[in-house]
Length: 262
Ligand SMILES: NC(=O)c1ccc[n+]([C@@H]2O[C@H](COP(=O)([O-])OP(=O)(O)OC[C@H]3O[C@@H](n4cnc5c(N)ncnc54)[C@H](O)[C@@H]3O)[C@@H](O)[C@H]2O)c1
Image (cartoon, rainbow, N blue to C red):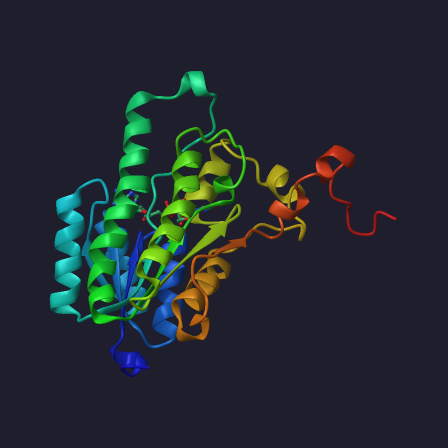
């Protein structure tokens, strides 16, 4: 390890959100200095107060804002060793013919272009220093069809970007991996359940474990892949989905068996 953990700097985009805030807390618990980057500064300041991280504004829809945030962190907090790209523009289910054109553009701008620019702006100094780790956040919708018509394709693209960066920068000391959360009980998703846009019971039925994912469980996976413990791991995707992907074909045979069904 080049520096003691207390001096190491990690960046979490979307650090004010459910999975982002849990990732900030996990990194802080391990002694990292953490930059909480988000466009929601009220929430980011609250997470900073709760965790001891440092809040700073970023807008992933704006390349200049991403570049300015990267410069701010390197100048004010020190060389960045770890980056978690958690921020994303979420979407509700609909059919292709009902896609709102403006929302399509907004989702691509943040999830696809914004993530690419974030990885480049924060990762390039890592590459030049010969050390760093990046974790992107995909989704189980990266891997299969879903009614998330703009979000799903951007999350599929995250896989390709992850592998591209992993190979392009691997010999320069930068590891790049992806975590795919399944349905996770973040405040944003809980609010969506409350509005009736998603049904947690239907989602639970599609899991192997019979429960949804907690934000801390995704954060643990992100933390592991950022840590030196994952030193031989790059270019992979790690689902954290309570076994949702594994249940794939069981619905053709009557679904996942209930506990004690026999
Ligand atoms: N919660 C789930 O069930 C679930 C499932 C699969 C994947 N994911 C992924 O996990 C990540 C976190 O999701 P979450 O549930 O914690 O959502 P969230 O809405 O709680 O967090 C997302 C954060 O990103 C920030 N953000 C959005 N647009 C931004 C922009 N333009 N610039 C800067 N910040 C911006 C928001 O302010 C928010 O704090 C996302 O990448 C999401 O796609 C979540």
